[in-house]
Length: 157
Image (cartoon, rainbow, N blue to C red; front, side, top):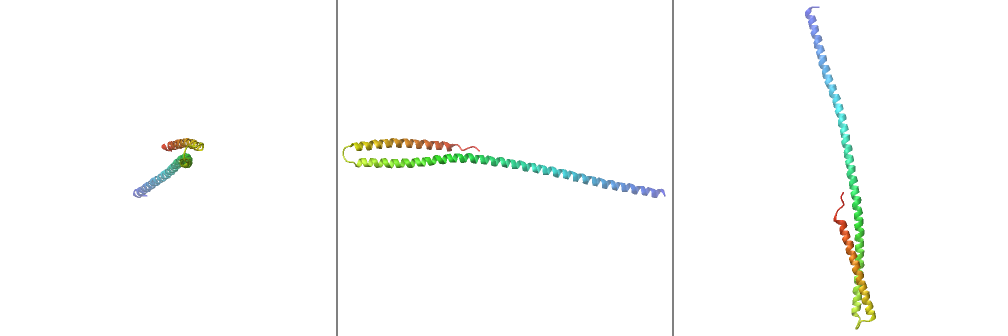
């Protein structure tokens, strides 16, 4: 073997080693990138799951708050409805009482002459009816005031 050919062989071996080393480095870099990508993807998936879970918990809290609010408002509306129904019934009763009192006054005015014991009884009945009507209208005013007090402040969610 001549020195020159030995030298060429050595250079070829060195060149092959360098090529293998470069290929190994490239392979190592690629593997590192794959490992980092997998790790990054795994962390991204975990982060995504965590965010989705937080959104679901927030949605649940919001829906719960809305349901609680709706229940409180429904209760107040029920109370208001009952009050309004009572007011309507009271006003209808007061209207009937007013009509009856008017009729009694008309009947009394249509009676002729002096006040008879029957007329006095009618006057007493009218006075009793007017006093009862005043009590009913005061009660209706109280109920209306209470109803107004219920609707002054909206329930807080």
